[in-house]
Amino acid sequence: MVTASVASATSAGGLAGASVQVRAVSHAFGDAGQALPVLDDVTFDVPAGETVALLGPSGCGKSTLLRLIAGLSAPQAGRIGVDQVRVVGPDPSRLLVFQDPLLLPWRTVEANVAYGLEARKIGDGQERVRQALRMVGLAAFAAAYPHELSGGMAQRAAFARVLVNHPRVLLLDEPFGKLDSLTRMTMQEELLALARRHAFTTILVTHDVEEALLLATRVLVFSPRPARIILDVDNGLPFPRLRDDPAFIARRREILIALGHGEEFAR
Ligand SMILES: Nc1ncnc2c1ncn2[C@@H]1O[C@H](COP(=O)(O)OP(=O)(O)OP(=O)(O)O)[C@@H](O)[C@H]1O
Image 1 (cartoon, helix red, strand yellow):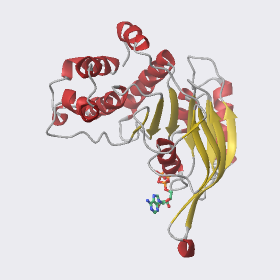
Image 2: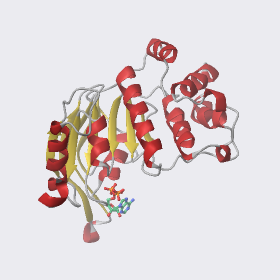
Image 3: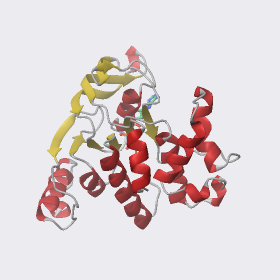
Image 4: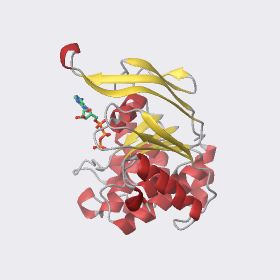
């Protein structure tokens, strides 16, 4: 997804990560009589430029937490900040990428990527779109329509649609969950290169323990709903990370056991 020329152009454009503060966040859905508690006193910090992975059982509250960080709704208790400034609503500097690319089928790739900028009347929009497409390796497909793209290419376009906004925090909700395993590995490597080169802050929700350990500097494991942090793994392994590194295997095992898998399975 990354080329050297784009990297320098983008750095000049001022992309850089922001720190994220999540403090004593609790959240529930429903009304007081029938409340569904989803997050229970969640506290963590993400330093600027780091990648934190969130792992936990299905339905525990990971996507809800991402949506709160995105500012799509407000936590019922606690506080979320970016660079120590309280999050009070959505902002183009903090954007979500989902499992589904959600491209508009009647627009070309280029027009999909430009969509958010049009509403904001950004002056150098065309150049920003070209730059975002180069960052994800889709420059040659600017004029293609979504139905002409493979699953991986469509997901690259979804990343470009976010990158064009010059985000400071990438919020990724199982972004590779629907891709075949080889495309997934390629895109994991590309995301890693992109995040390290541009020092984005990244918060990644995934069900894939290896993906978390390959990409993140820290892995937070959550309990079943209401989600609490039950394991906090400092994942300072050097790059490139190898799946057969004994330290990688030990962390994988520790996380699988925290997620409730037996010793035998986690081996
Ligand atoms: N808008 C909503 N209104 C009511 N309940 C909701 C809402 N959004 C999520 N929930 C419920 O909150 C709980 C947590 O959902 P969430 O999507 O955050 O979990 P998750 O950990 O991301 O799950 P998964 O890993 O399966 O994607 C679930 O029980 C879900 O049904």
